[in-house]
Image 1 (cartoon, rainbow, N blue to C red):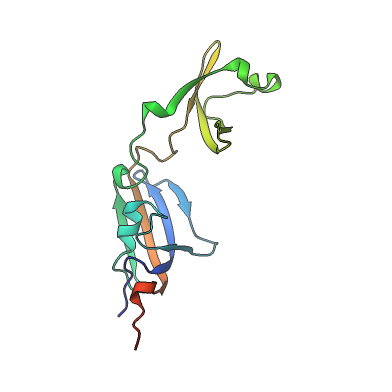
Image 2 (tube, rainbow, N blue to C red):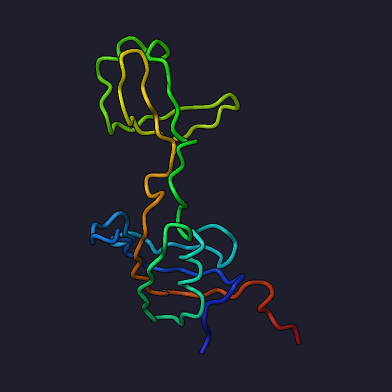
Length: 153
């Protein structure tokens, strides 16, 4: 029986939960997630959870924060002057509000307002799941062997 290994392109259905049971993501009602095992396209713990599964097989994997999105880092929290926000936006700022920011190279990334001070706003650029242990229910739907799996006659 063929099982998923590094280099294979796989399709999986998944249900991601926090340790308190709260769902943060699921493929339910969507196409299965497709990725190459071991390529870094998914978090390391998810890659490991798929490895060794056969088509139709299901597995629940518990992924510690270090094998998921890492620990939250205070280096990712920055103080941003209110005067640099558009004037009409300042009165609408709220703790927990997500914002899109861009850096000097034009790359965009999401931040969340952590705190609003008199003249500044604390913005948190950590991944929303940083510092959290995750649980995934995974079902392997399909395997397409990688190039290294092809045997030439």
